[in-house]
Image 1 (tube, rainbow, N blue to C red):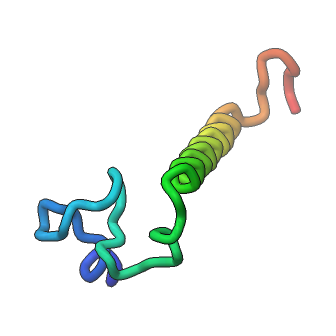
Image 2 (tube, rainbow, N blue to C red):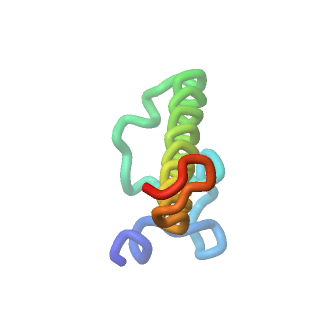
Length: 78
């Protein structure tokens, strides 16, 4: 919607390159990110990546559970 059109532009659409890959702030949104030192920024990005990976594994578990239905090979019928 509105964020994609007005704020989250990539360098192919005329925006300046971000500080790191996936940085779509373009100077419009800043919640104090620029005040952190480099070590803190790396730590926060690593934490965010790990949270995203955990969320993907959770969704995968939900999808697998949905496809198994009521029959689990080891346990049997539920």
